[in-house]
Length: 561
Ligand SMILES: Cc1cc2nc3c(=O)[nH]c(=O)nc-3n(C[C@H](O)[C@H](O)[C@H](O)COP(=O)(O)OP(=O)(O)OC[C@H]3O[C@@H](n4cnc5c(N)ncnc54)[C@H](O)[C@@H]3O)c2cc1C
Image (cartoon, rainbow, N blue to C red):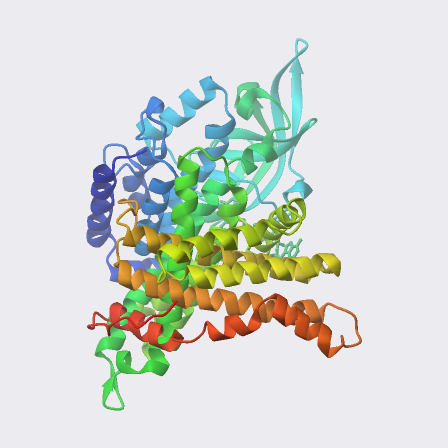
């Protein structure tokens, strides 16, 4: 782990470098020219310059050995600067992941030291034209080359699609099918038979190079098979999902806040109908406050998951998926709202919010689409529901009730309502065998994410109140503000789970309407009346969050749990 002071210093240098070398005018010009600023990417990765790569390389190979929390902090900052450049810089981290988790000690020493000492750029080549979300459909092959009765190397044939740094990397980790299954190989840029396509003309992250790769009888020596054992590729890819999805979650968070941080000052100055837009509740409570709240819910889940990964709790793939889902969807929504918030100006290149909106769009696609995240989340928690005979979320709700008893203002009571309702909706889905409908399974993924994030945000607000928040994390909001943010989100989560859940378990049930008594029983089971009552005070809390965001003296808190 990196010491908090060192991390803060690195982030400060990063911010200062970006201010000098990537001013807004340059970002707009590079975006228009569809150009990756390779000199800047190399500067950021060079050990004798900014050396961002060093943060992630383990200490024994010459890096600083940053953990998941450090990665989150740096990724958020990078995304605030430019998501294309962030993608280019962090692609090396992604590309070297199969090596970090699966390589032999000799391979690790060679390649991770080269990243640290030489600042070489990596690309991560998994996706293919016909294998995107479903990597099992992989068609690239790696055939053994046998010499003197031993495997001397492999011959790689096939193609890869949408590879970040595809046209500029020095080395590539490439997933290919061996006789024993998918395996990662390290391929040099200049290998005979290996070619890179021209940069893709993309909707966003136009400062990042994305290119197809083509392999025609590319020979690699046997020591380029990551880990030296065939068939470990998908396991190695999975082993870092929790970590890498947190990285993209932080991208969504950083880009979303970058957009809001343009909309907030703009609306404080923009006068329409005689007063600033920031004073118009119909504006702030639609375009600004809900997005800030959702981003902070994503942050709470990212920070909690990062701390758990750093504490050695394992890969936490499902938690990584929840963090990615919430923060990237929130980032998209915030950037989209920021265009609206700036009106006609938002629709032009000059004000940058439309660029951020195009850029952040990728975060709900790469490293697993939002729909794949919903499926991942839902499948895993469905098993937990079954194994515990429906207790899983009731137990989590009980924990929230205990937290509410200690901190009545941090929204834990609302999170408890959301979690209890979720348990009931899942049970109804089980007895009605509703998860045979894929739509229900995926919607469950969404409600799970909301309910779990409500819990996480309430815990974060309580920790803030107790003065126990991780000092590396964001300190943007004080305890009062964070509690109000949590209450707004908790109410949303409870209403969403109950109302949408009831809608879909009814919608997926028999074609003939259930008797009124049965529907009323279901509403009582999810505690719909209490969830409706819990909306009391919502507007007041949103006013409070708006006041904090605009630096106005907030009204006295009048929350009743
Ligand atoms: C700019 C950019 C950079 C990228 N960088 C990299 C990189 O560096 N390395 C790399 O390996 N890949 C990279 N990718 C690829 C990216 O990870 C894939 O695009 C992504 O995983 C989705 O795959 P796909 O594009 O084939 O879409 P598909 O898998 O075809 O999905 C299309 C749509 O169908 C949905 N869908 C798919 N399967 C299901 C299902 N079973 N049920 C319900 N809905 C489903 C998806 O959610 C999506 O909405 C990059 C992509 C882009 C655009």
